[in-house]
Image (cartoon, rainbow, N blue to C red; front, side, top):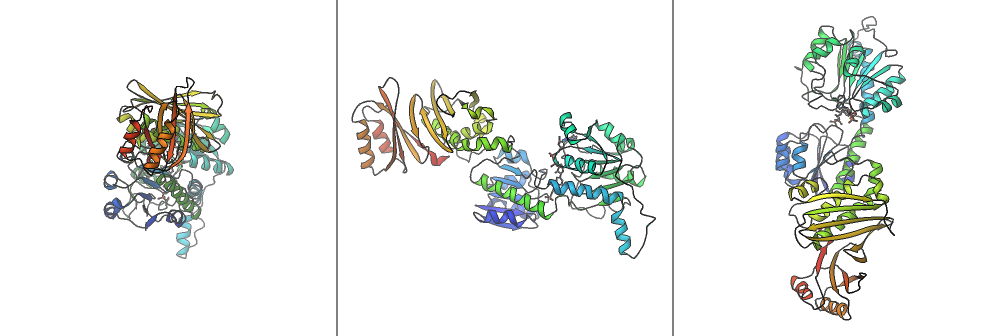
Length: 527
Ligand SMILES: NC(=O)c1ccc[n+]([C@@H]2O[C@H](COP(=O)([O-])OP(=O)(O)OC[C@H]3O[C@@H](n4cnc5c(N)ncnc54)[C@H](O)[C@@H]3O)[C@@H](O)[C@H]2O)c1
Ligand SMILES: O=C(O)[C@H](O)COP(=O)(O)O
């Protein structure tokens, strides 16, 4: 498999990927070149410079995962990726400290005129009077967007003895209290703060949230910081407000169009400090995001879920720890029901019993669906597209939970309905090892690997021997065997583990045997 690492990604993550894959590294990647080369790649890693547009995604016939070595995914067309089943991952926390510290640096640089003082001194000037600044202590900082970076900035501002007013429609009072900030409305923040810093993504709601109208409502001498996304503060309005003295100063790291050229409205305005999108540019952050995303790409290319996928329901690290051993088992249960079903599946129920019922099991259910669909679908089914593919095929998916797991510590039962027939396969974890423990009413103990041949048969002497002879004569090695019974003892279920495929002819001859009710092959190599 081949990975494209664009935009000057730190070598640390690239080294991890190179252990398994061919990695093509491009520090600068013009849009036309990206379009031309993208069909070769299974994965791409980008920062904010490369735009992974719908056009790029449409041409990316082999692409399975897009890794954003950073937070903002606004340079990636996520709906287009999702529609193609391409996983999009980011590194939500890898550059938080870098962006938080950059925001503090920008606030201090702006309030103490450091950039201009340095610039003039480098020219041999000594201007102590001209560059008198203002202090942070005792001032009110308005933080709009109290996520990872906003909270980090608030925490540091409190250490500078500032008062913090926070606006975030999704923050609750409890969290605000724990952080030591005062929750306020948007209007309260803009009307009362001496400094305002924004830390939210650029969305239709946040685009242009601060324009001339809002700046006119602010305190005289207010100073603004934007280290989040260009466009949250209207650039032309900000330039004008600073020129007119409505706003005393601004510190900006991000722009509506990057890279910025000399004719940008914010360039050359006295009182405005600019940096070229440096928020995440520390050695530590770049190693962090590169390694995070490389690990995610490795997992995704091995068919495993990635907790930081942005086009899948998020899973917390705590929940991931509990559910990850079940994912593989659930996939194999899904694969088994699909293979044993009498026809196309109309609905599937995933029932959880025991300890696992205490956490969110959505991803485990998705794993079961992935396992069900992969053996029967042409393209790759993964954690992103499995739920929508099931929906497209009209398969109703439901979950059920029961605390009691009988004699097991935990149990997952996947039941598939096909017309008026039903197949139910249950599995459990013994330590980290998955086992199939029932197939319909038959009690078995099957390690779900390689291929299994599942045969309900009459409970009488000779049947097992006959099957053994047919397999032997066909040079098919049996590496495991289980016979499960039911209470009525009239029918048994034979499960043979085999490494090789079974020719159709051999399968047909087994099915035709007297006393064999059915013979179905489950191929776990398909999951
Ligand atoms: N300058 C840089 O190099 C740099 C580096 C890292 C992150 N960023 C950007 O900083 C921003 C914040 O990153 P983060 O990691 O803190 O994200 P986050 O997801 O942890 O936090 C975003 C917060 O914004 C809030 N929010 C959403 N809509 C809002 C609205 N309309 N009004 C107020 N709050 C709203 C959310 O509730 C959330 O708490 C992102 O845009 C990210 O891309 C920039
Ligand atoms: O969203 C982010 O993570 C930042 O804007 C950093 O972008 P960068 O990776 O291009 O520095």
